[in-house]
Image 1 (tube, rainbow, N blue to C red):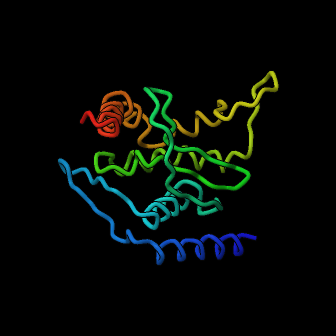
Image 2: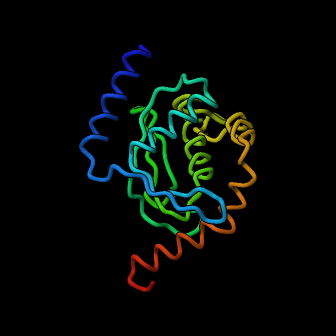
Length: 171
């Protein structure tokens, strides 16, 4: 079953990679921090790297860029995991040269935890709770957890505001 999954997702990868007009990755170095605007092939490479490092290469799933509405503050969806399709959708807002690769990797790790943990976790009273205590412990064990929270609080909101202003013609 893993072999079929591997063949399927790498066939899909090759189709998107070779049919894409945007084949080249643009890297910008800002104070020594590698940032990027990634084509789908590089996003898949990040998925594979995180899968190998944190999940032993056992997760089977897909990944792609999606346009989510630009909400305000904590209402912004950075990514989501559709477990029934085993697919992670990543907000195009993270496809910005001001977003460091380590932060993108952290967001991908968070969504991949949903694949790892299963379709739904439940609270003690039986309600669906996708960020269970176990999930939170695993997320906090990521080496960039604290750094990611600081980035979200201090920098990400500024980037989102500038994108919203640009989209509305004010920037």
